[in-house]
Image (cartoon, rainbow, N blue to C red):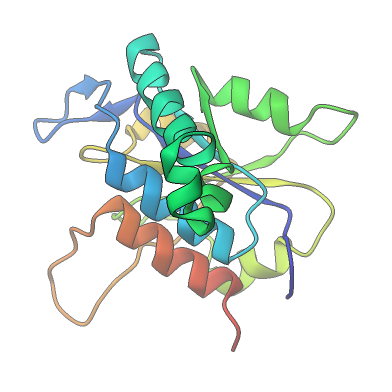
Length: 188
């Protein structure tokens, strides 16, 4: 595959869970914005949605984007500008899906990610083939301790977890996003 693909990313800050399994809204991380948008730009993703119901967090995202796309950061690092222009701050997954499906496009298929296996996980090769179709796909990542089970159950697909050769499995979301994008879209 070359160029852009019919793939969108969403970094979900709510509903996610904390280490005790309680449903929370997590804080936005500057590092996640920078690193995931750079990976998204590298692999031709259409847009990167940062989903949080908290207005102050969406405003923070807009301020960070503005610094790197219009402010001093845009002049200092034009490559970063190109990547951060992919970011859209929205209050819900539905808002992201409405934007993606605008202009008569079909509603995207949703793909949740999780560090745990699920009975009906979709593999990387199967999802990669699906991305070649006309229907858009929204690949959703959770922050904090991951997406809630209830949220995952609403997704059309759940991607197989990243498993290394050890029993340890607690990657940062930005590392997981980069690995997954390479597995789905990287040159082989």
